[in-house]
Image (tube, rainbow, N blue to C red; front, side, top):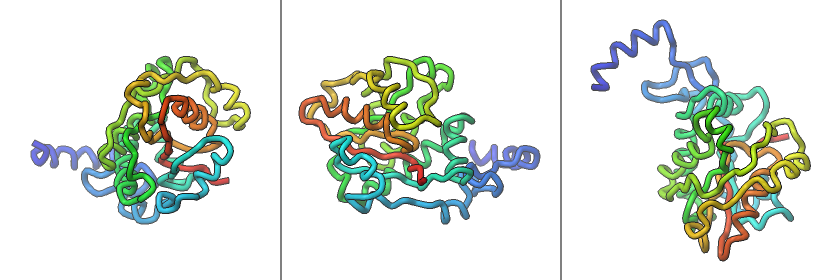
Length: 233
């Protein structure tokens, strides 16, 4: 059926071109979402190869973290920002799936993530979930699960208080806002597990910090983290 639709899709592309979601200029290979040039040159962090790295350093003295990594380095007005923007605000869920799968494949090669038991995405409040239609962190988590071979527990954490967007707030403001907004929804499924906490972008780390420490209240849990990007200042 896919082959039968190919001529029709090619015809539509003449009027509605399928552009790369990173550079938003080139056309990616058929069936892909990122062009060949961007795949080869997007700034991968490769933090999964190092136990201590700029990701884990952000949480020194804040979280007892086992390991941490990001797929890409995030800077403003970059192709990585385009990817994140397409995922969060333009309903391009395929970005999260593809990049999560890529990150999961990389974690399979890392000695620092080998004993992870379960993936838990940072949750959205039900109000924002209804507005957006999906949780981008869960989309990433599901893609990561495919590449990494670990289950994703989408409802492991629950956000119980709605808060406004925190994109431009300081770490202190974010910590104040998110301090009591998360609950562990599935404690029996997470006790004694090494949990990989997943979000889209690491900026101040306030939300990840609160989520991680909430998970660490459970008996015998350990926490690692992974994001699609880390903001570089």
